[in-house]
Length: 168
Image (cartoon, rainbow, N blue to C red; front, side, top):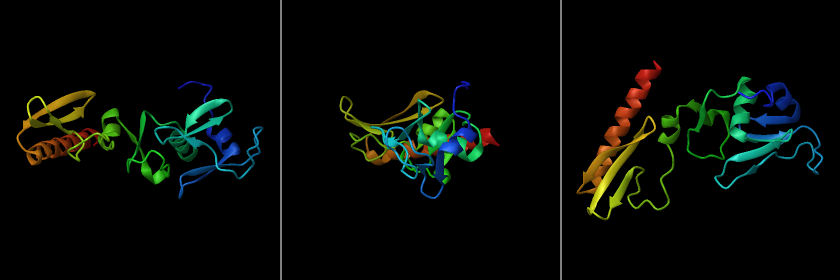
């Protein structure tokens, strides 16, 4: 990790974090008119909290981890409930890239109502896919939506069990 990142001590001297709300508030007056006690940061277009501290931009959930545990996350941080603006520490967990994408919200164009299940116009069948270890696995094409969803559910259960076994 780069040495010019903020430390926990510096972060705590500038900001106060409320684990029940997931929000940061400034402890000090800022030069841009922000007063001590004001809420820190703003949401970006993907609904992640972003804030500038000591001239550098940080995502809020990563600062929550540093503030709480005194270290930067090893890799990815996952918002357990899928809401990127919910920075309560109880809603954050360290994750692999695969785990991080596992509870991603479905695409707004999704017609099946299920992540990983899409309509394939060329074959006129439902297609089920899942990502694993950075690769897209095609689970097959199915005549019915229900069959495609079942294939996706089965793959999720297997993926989840394999991830659990690897962690133990």
